[in-house]
Amino acid sequence: MQGKIIKGIAGFYYVHTAESGIYECKAKGIFRNQKIKPLVGDNVRLTILNEEEKTGSIEELLPRKNALVRPAVANMDQALVIFAAAKPKPNFNLLDRFLILMKYQDVPVMICFNKQDMVSQQELALLQEAYRGAGYQIRFTSAMEETGIGELRGLLQGKTTAVAGPSGVGKSSLINLLHPEAGMETGVISEKIERGKHTTRHSELFALDGESYICDTPGFSSVYLPELEKEDLKDYFPEFQEYEQGCRFQGCVHIHEPDCRVKEALEQKKISRIRYENYKCLYEEIKNKRRY
Image 1 (tube, rainbow, N blue to C red):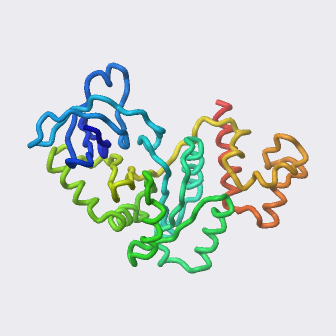
Image 2 (image 1 turned 45 degrees about the vertical axis):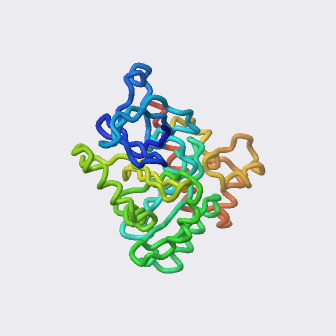
Image 3 (image 1 turned 30 degrees about the vertical axis):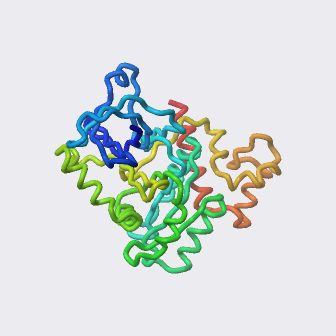
C-alpha cells in the first residue's frame, strides 16, 4: 500500500492512505543504516501489520521531488509564509531571511499578512508595495473576521504547501479555517500514542482534499541564512535585476559604488526602502561571518 507521511514523532511515522486512513508506522532499520531519515511529505510504500490497530511498517521511500532543510519537509510545491500586519508588527528582516532561504531551496513563496483588520488601508498598501515589487504574491487575511480565507484556499488548490511563520501571527487559526478537521486529525494521532502530546512542535501535513495538502511547520523566531557569498546576495532580491544591467561596474553590489542604477531606483521609490535596508544589513552579516 502507498501513503504519505503526515507526521513524525519519537520514531513513529503517521502515514495517510487514500484507501484506509492513518497508520502508525515504524521505519525499517535499513533507512537508519543508510542514514536516510523519512520526512513529513514523503510518499512511502508500507506493509500493514495490524489492520484493527492501524499499525504498519514503512518499507520504501518513494523518490522525492525536493527536500527542504528548514523546515525539514519533502515534496513541497510552494511555501506560504504568514506574518501579522500588526500585533506583533512584521519583522521584515526575519521575513526577508525566510524568502532568501526558500529561494535558495528553489521553492516559490506566497506572503500572507494576517490581522488586516488591525491596520489602516494605507499601512496595507505599504506592505503590498514592499513585496509585490519583488515579485511575490501578497494576500491579506483576518482569521478573526474570517476574511480572505476563500481566496487563500484557492491558491493552495492542487498543491502541497508548507505553511510557516513566527509565533503569534495567527497561523494556527488560519489553518483551522482552511481545514476545520486539522484539530481533529491531531487528536486522533495523540490518542494513538501518548508521545503525540509532546509540547515540542513538529511539522504536520493535512489533506485539504484529494490533491491539496498543507504542511504546518513549527513557528520560528530566527532564520539562518544559507551559505552564500556576499556578492551572491543581490541575486536573492529579484527587484534589483531590472536595474543592475545599467550599473557602471560589472559585479556592482549596489552599496558603495557610484553610478549604481539600483540605488537610483531606490531614490525614485521604484525599490522598497525596507527591502534595500535589509539587503545592506544581511550583506554586512555575511561579510562579517566570512571574516572569522
